[in-house]
Image (cartoon, rainbow, N blue to C red; front, side, top):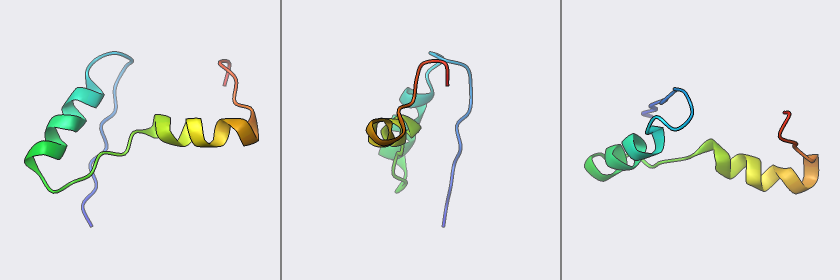
Length: 49
C-alpha cells in the first residue's frame, strides 16, 4: 500500500498538488474535508473545532 500525506497551512495548494499527483500516479486523492462533511450531521462539528 502506498500512502502520501500532504500537510501544510491553509490555502497553499495542497489540493492542487494532490490532484496533480493523482493524474501522474495510480494513487487516489482523499481529502479530509470529505470525512468532516460526512460526520458533521451526526457529531455537530463547529467552526471552533
